[in-house]
View 1: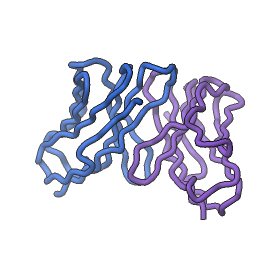
View 2 (view 1 turned 60 degrees about the vertical axis):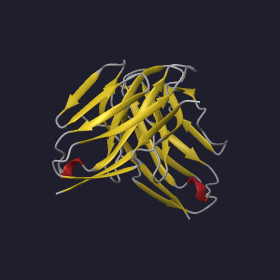
View 3 (view 1 turned 90 degrees about the vertical axis):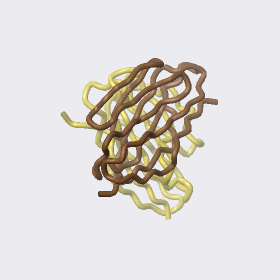
Length: 113
Length: 112
């Protein structure tokens, strides 16, 4: 079956611009996660959805970052007033439920010039 | 604070030379430990889940083991296609969050 998909695969933007990153989870998975991975580091947690609601957004670095999952399936990570330090690979994962194995998408590489 | 440390950071092996990767963790309680493989430019690919000390899982040339403080990923007679970064992650039981806490990974290179 289809895995987690993420679009775009690459995004180059200028400092101060707004970006949206999309995640399409595995069909039927109720839990969805966003992580950020910098070069040479492991993924770092950003936010977790159970259904439509954000159950834990403690990893969002500041209020420029926001994520939604309005219908409990596709999720969008939104970053306002991008900064060069936001450059990283943004990974999305989904799981059938809480504490289940998380399956990752290919990631979106964000570059802020 | 929940923490995962992987060693070594990088490992070079000759084809057929067996070795082990280490993942040590300090968490308030462990609900599960996960091993993932990550190829360059790709997302992490799930390998194993371990839940309790003494548990072992095997898949082809890989075997994962778990103790109360660490996990090992044993690679037997590796092949060049085993070259990748191997990530360890834990599900802490405290705090009510479902987030995985990852180590930095071990970059494995297997030379033919």
